Length: 191
Picture 1 (cartoon, one colour):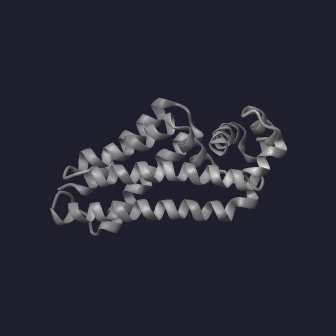
Picture 2 (cartoon, rainbow, N blue to C red):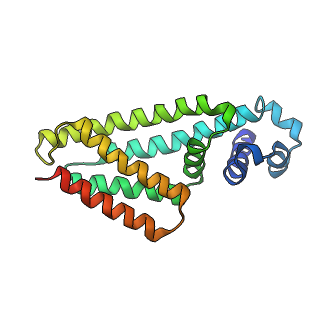
Picture 3 (tube, rainbow, N blue to C red):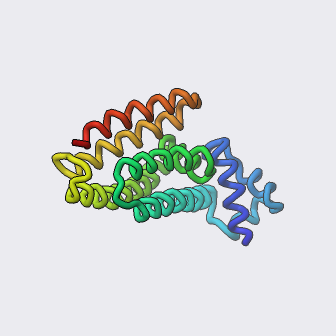
């Protein structure tokens, strides 16, 4: 129970202040502990940070995979819905904000370890998405030289939206980028 509370407090401070700006003393105080008591739950700041990061990764991964497993035979609705899901997750879930910010701006000494976590998530999502796109290609619901090409193009839109979410807080600019990218992508994969 206390480990969960510590991780929630850490999430808050790491998201707001980043790795360098978050203090173990602040995190401990938030949950009513002394700083040294944190070491009975976590080996140190790096361990706490990576556990919070992996929890955030799991939140994003499980949400995206659940969505991809539920979608059906309407690629236009389902793919656009996925883009809206990405935006909504970032805007409403602190775990996702933290995950995204740390994947863009990892602490230098944890960059390689975080990079492996990011690659793992992206590979799992890409594999499921590519399988779904292959099904749509076989059903002739969309057109593309390959499922891989359509998947990578679609994920390029996702990446553009993520950059917009991290760097720009202007809703209209995000909406404009979403609509322009979606319109062009959808025209490219339909007959």
